[in-house]
Length: 124
Image (cartoon, rainbow, N blue to C red):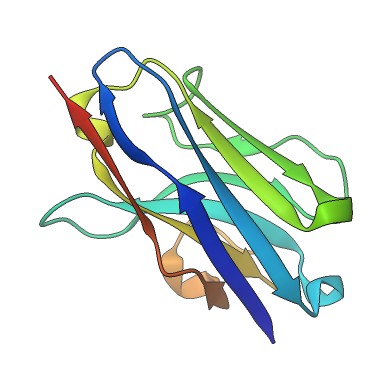
């Protein structure tokens, strides 16, 4: 089993920056990929970014955040981060940390473990 706990988030102005963190615990040796998803109000959960947990291959980003968001990890501390710059109103959502044991795609159903989520609100 793997446990994920998000922290950070909060309120930011449009054009500003914010960061969220994910603390992982448990059997992380079974994890292949860690990712961030988000769920805007009234919408379905969507992929944001993913980073391989064991290897150092390049992260993947959703087109909507490419060039603005940066995903990173500290494997030694079992931590994952998402730095969000140039925020806009459409980035308002609950942000979730997720982990997959087998190489996933971008669908929430392909991930095995989830955190409880943290709210990010961007004001205009």
